Structures are given as structure tokens and as C-alpha cells.
Figure 1 (cartoon, rainbow, N blue to C red):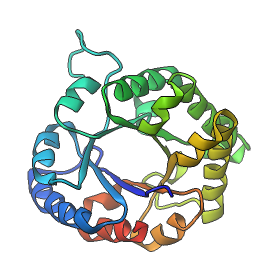
Figure 2: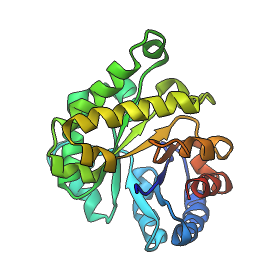
Figure 3: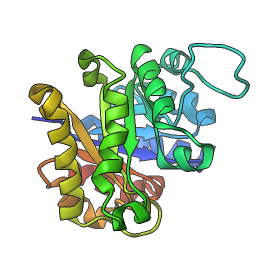
Figure 4: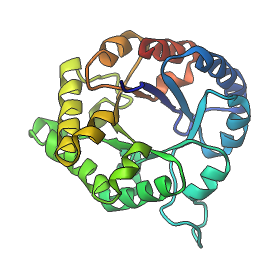
Length: 248
């Protein structure tokens, strides 16, 4: 039985005030939650978030560099994140792909670096509205997944989580229907099963894209949806806790 995950991506939002109110509340929730709860605040807040998280709440970063170290001003390596006692890092978010030109090959390198440092990589994949309307959803999404799984060892799949986020549903208020989301999740799992049925069955695949308390329970009830990657709603403690409880 796959254990569900609810991950909150704060993006470039938040403050010390929010950190001090939201993280302790989530740390309390995580003590009893049946799902794993993960929070990914901006890098400046990671140290304090880790201090406040306690034993059960997991803290992750929003990005990492693919190199172990070097002359990369402003960047943070996966090994540095691991030294800060983080557990996860997001890789391949659509905003990184669109705004910073991150390619499938670069994202595969980042994923390999994250896993090599002992982190769990949360690989974000998803199609644009144009790609969906032209019938290319599975070509795009499965291509993004393939670029990564071909770069890592099968034994590393245990340190990989996939998050399907249709780009057209991120921050727009639009959400893929339960059937639309389940169909893509199922296709991802079936593609992985061609390589290893056992590892594919164990892979946790999250849905992201305007997840909120009102739609979380129905989405999480789909057989191949193993939780959510939550954006704006993760900045509201009551809303985010409701989503976490829907996963439990």
C-alpha cells in the first residue's frame, strides 16, 4: 500500500511570521497524520523550518543545482541541502522549465544529484494547454518521465516521487477532472511498469494544479493518485491541514 504524500510548495512566498505560525501547526498535524506531510519554503527559511518541524513534518527545498560544488554564484547543491537535514527537493517544476529554460536533460541531472545526496526528488511533469488541446499530453508527460528514469538506476526509484501538474491548472483555479488526472497517472504507472512492474506499483505519483480542500478528497480517492503537490493553498494553515486530512 503506497503511503500518500501532501507537499506544499510555497514558491517565492512567505515570511518569518508565516513560518512561525504555519510550520508548528503542521508539525502537530504530522504527528497523527496517516499521510506524509512535506513543506517546501523558500531557501532562506529552510534552516528555521527544519528547526520548527519536529520529528514527523518533512522539509524540502524548491530547487537544487546539478553539480556537487563549484563556481555557481547563487546556487545551492543537493549535498548542501542534505547537510541541512532536508528530506526532499522539487525538480523540474513547470515554472523552472518555462522561466529558466530547464530542459529534460538538466532536470535528469538534478534528479540524479538529489538522489545521490540522499534526498528524495519530487519530479514535476506536465503539459501546457496547447499541448493538451493538440492531443500531446501523454507524449509530453511520458517523455519528461522517461528522460529522468533512464538516467537513474532502478534501485534509485525508491528515492523518486513524481508529481503530475498540468501547466494549465497551476495557479489558475482550473483543476483537471478526476478522470483526466487519473488517466495521466495511470499512463505514467503503466509506462514505468514496462521497465519494472514491482517498482512502478511502489512509485508514488502526486497530482498538482489548484488542489484545495474542496476537491482534494475526490482526487486522492483515484486509484493512481497518491497525494498532492499544493501551491497557493499551502500558505493557508486551515486549508492545507484540511487537504492533509483528506489524504489521511
